[in-house]
Length: 282
Image (cartoon, rainbow, N blue to C red; front, side):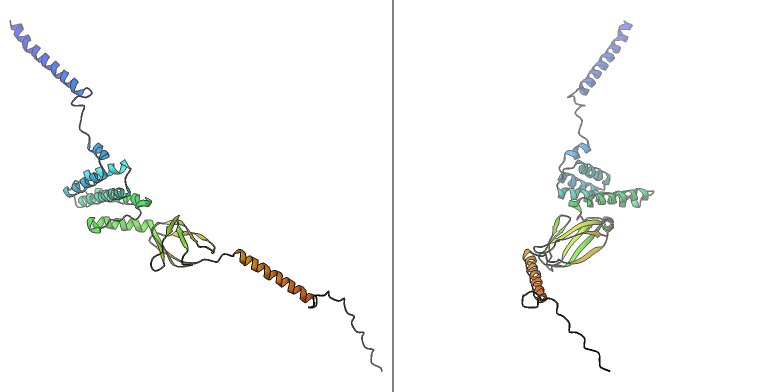
């Protein structure tokens, strides 16, 4: 009797353990409840539209959750396939996140090094952004929407990366001006300018009908504006060469007439010189 009483609880515990193990196995099986875990933040960001990511990042900035905003923006950038406007905003907000986090850490105990690392990350992202041709004109505007440290970082990076080119005067005024395969348009005052040119060599061409085409390589220096004036040389036409040929032929005929004595007849033979006079008589 005592053995039956002892064995009864043991059997119940064994049965309960078996049921628990079966429930765990069913939950872990494909399609089970535990297998259907909620997607991670990273997976959600990868599938979210850029507008959603940007909206959420701005809200996290307000809450001071800079790390979360930075991670979401970084993952969205890595996803690729963005429209130019969205790509620009993703860069601006990511850079803003690094700067805000740097500002937050700067005055914390032992936080200066971490702050400088975030400022460095912001600078690297600015260089990455401005190196893309479609984003080379990116600026933190309006400046009131961004921290002053970010505005200064953009100005510093731009001064190291970009220069400018300006044509003060050009002849003829209707010449086509091409810089690196892009046509420059004249301003109202007749000048041409190109801003945000990457420092280094650039191919420049000026062309106009009836003028010789001019091509040169410009060396753009950072934080400087190269100014030039151009006057194209007229190209010689077929009529010009024909006229020159007529002039040359006419000159040759005239020279022949002069050599022949002026009447067109053949020149006479050499004329004998008079004999010397006799010596004076003594």
